[in-house]
Amino acid sequence: ELMRRAAAAAPDGSPERRSLEDESSSLSQRTRQAEQDNATIYQDPVPSAGALPRLEPKLFVKPIRPEEGLSSAQAAYADAFPALLPAATAAAVTQFHGEVHAKLHDLSTRTTSDAEKAQKALAELELPQALEACEADKRLPARLVRAIAKAQATGGVGVLEELLSACTALEKEAVGAATMANEVLKAEEEKDAALLSDEPRLTRPLLHALKTTQPLVITRSQLDTNRERLETA
Image 1 (cartoon, rainbow, N blue to C red):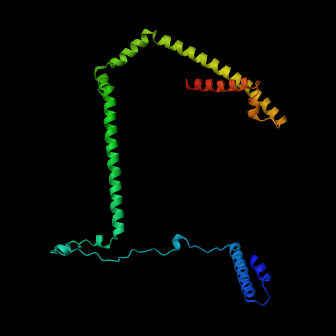
Image 2 (cartoon, one colour; image 1 turned 180 degrees about the vertical axis):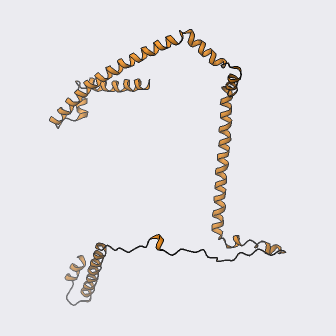
Image 3 (tube, one colour; image 1 turned 90 degrees about the horizontal axis):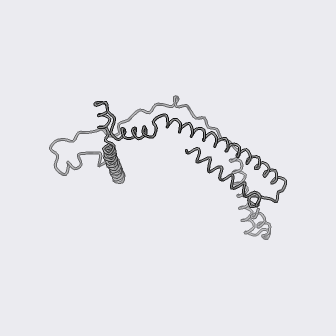
């Protein structure tokens, strides 16, 4: 469009106008051709893999065994592979082999270190000798015997079961109280949402900053914290 306007502004019959008109016509033609190419969807049939002819292997270079009795200069070129392999490819192969060797060495070192740490940890726990002694002597390790004696000294299994029942009852009571508090807070949240919908100028941060709403915000936070502690326990 700019080219056409420039041509119209040039004097009639001038070389500049003819040049601009030719360039404008060429651009218009190329634009129409591009729009046509973009609007055309070409679908070329692609044959299936089974319809394609099978590629047969071909031997490009016949392998020849080096003759015996080669000189030192000839022996350096007896292997045809290094001679045919480009220097850049040979360097890349060497680098790759070095990286693989380094990774394998690192894995071997870490595996050895982890095995030593595991053996040390087992030795501190007197394992597996302690388990083998249990099976052979029918006796528990001294440390386990002391732990059992300590548990029995506090009242035995009966006291532990009573403590477990008390903990379970307290857990149910706490869950009930948290559920009730959650329902109350949910009702207050619905009232807040209704208030925000009725008062578009009132935002939630501004609502939370009100003195009448701050206790509810603190209670919600404390309830969430106590619920997380209860679930962890």
